[in-house]
Image 1: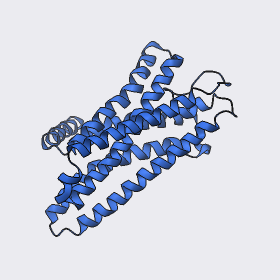
Image 2 (image 1 turned 60 degrees about the vertical axis):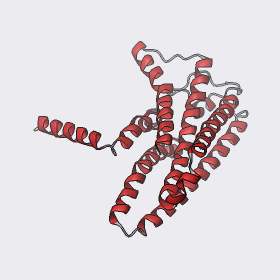
Image 3 (image 1 turned 60 degrees about the horizontal axis):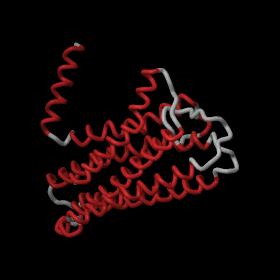
Length: 255
């Protein structure tokens, strides 16, 4: 689990470093300009980190499934070599997915100007600038990515159905509590990741507006990477104790 958490932390750091420093510099210097190569690099790295993170979260659900449902086979099924292979596959799939989308998007001719109405380079806003008859290839790649993402989602759901069935059959209440406490941080991180992305990309067009699009992009690109370390660190007793003291002090100051 800690090996996958290390990969998740590195991906979170990369994801938030791709968009936030540039946005902060733009706000500081009152500019929104970015070079063509810089936009392509930003899109590539953002897609790479976000895709690899989703694959790592999918593999973490399998890790929890094996740990709870097949604990005696954990060392065999998820040894160091197997974990390294799974992590390498997640990073490699992220690179491939990002490379395909970036190459496809930046091969399109731009007919609607060069102003991206977002605080970072994002596929939907770049497609709005392209010629309407030329982006069908990228739409096909997006549909393929959606199908792959849905397959990962189904795998996660099936894994957790098996996990909950195994946990509810445990005779020990302490064992059930330990199993749930192991799964809850992963479920919280996964729910935060998926809910913000779904709201950003699948919201009805009738409620779409530039300010709402900007807010949703900020939520799904910044909030999950920023909150993931906090969610997982809540299992640490020292951090829990420190956080409770901070909250008690804040409440005392308010009163």
